[in-house]
Image 1 (tube, rainbow, N blue to C red):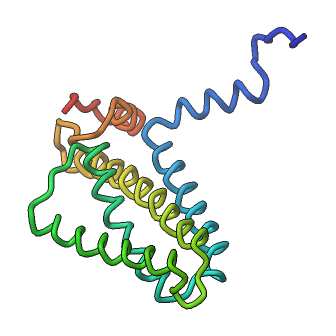
Image 2: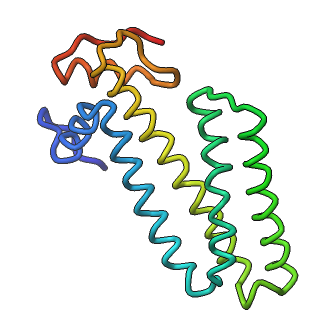
Image 3: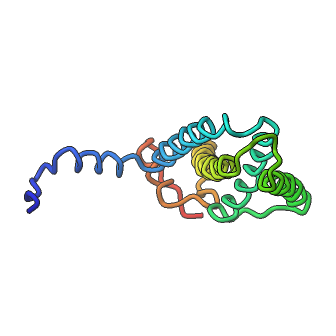
Length: 169
């Protein structure tokens, strides 16, 4: 049914090899794509969301940054940072409750939730790009250790850039 795979592999195999050679740089590619997706989702939702509701719901980016940092980079936060996140989250939650109860200056609930969902993707992109920048900065500064949360692709970056591979964190 499907044609046999040739030795060259065709354009799909070529794209797969290029993706594998990208190493840690693919974090930047995925992060950029997530940023573009966030912008499109926000652009789609914005006509149906009031400006103040958009501003309040966009504060959830800080919460998602914290969650993604904890999950992907094993970050820890002090009480003052958690207090700031709690204030931002309470403002966003009260805004969603206001919109759900019919307030929110004509904002539609599904579009308000789309704004929140777009913040989640943007935060993940920021965290992954941040880990890529930290790994590169550490390498350029001459450190021999990968930063916490950096995966095996960090070694690929160093090897392809002419440096010695980093040791696992």
